[in-house]
Length: 308
Image (cartoon, rainbow, N blue to C red; front, side, top):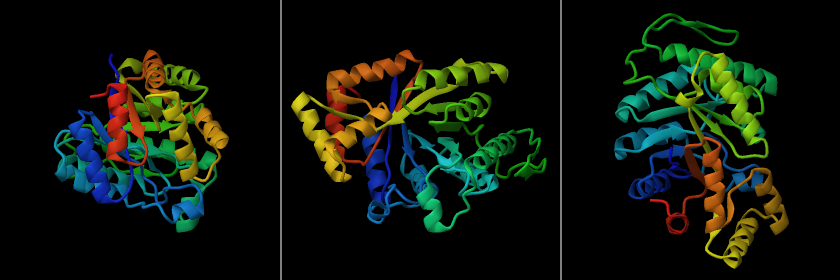
């Protein structure tokens, strides 16, 4: 299956709406937002980065876009009870004519929980909550409304009203080596496997978990996402990397180490095309381009890569 492409950005609503228009005009299949209350890992940078509520923004996009799939990539279970996630997902689903996909995760950014005073249990407890929430959401979106009883969350056998227009797809994503692939194989309609040196092992664990759950892994979309840094020439790429490093107050070597740990596609356009082809060979069929939205830069990137 050919690779399809999507865009993930953040920022003010005007910025997000412009990015969605760009994605539509370029023929991309989906538009994603991250769900964070801070958009940077350091306090100084977070003070300067707009971090609106992504669900509210999706309400606007549901009415101001027509064809794009709208994807939450992803919402931490620490922010909201799964009942709230279910209600918001169904509302956006109906407002968009059945175009919303709900991504859920365990939560990972310490700083945003500390700043806003949001309870942040230890990692093992968050993953227990995450697994419980996935079971809850599966029951909530089931037209037979079977109910759910878990350690953290309970749902009576009671139908949602309004009901979703379809079974709302669930995305599970992250860099977890074991629990994330297992939960994706058990619950996900899409597994967003973030690049990294162990990506092949995580994909194999996901596929094995799907089979163990009585599911065909080929029926579950395998996607990936990340920043992409590319230019027509080596010199252009070096200039772009230095620009990115300066923007986040890193050295050029620190930026390279940061991207290497994440296997960020980077280099000349030819080199990046080869890296994306490598993802496709692993069975990945969708890639979300992440980053700050700059239409001119994104247009140049997509032109150089021959996308849309």
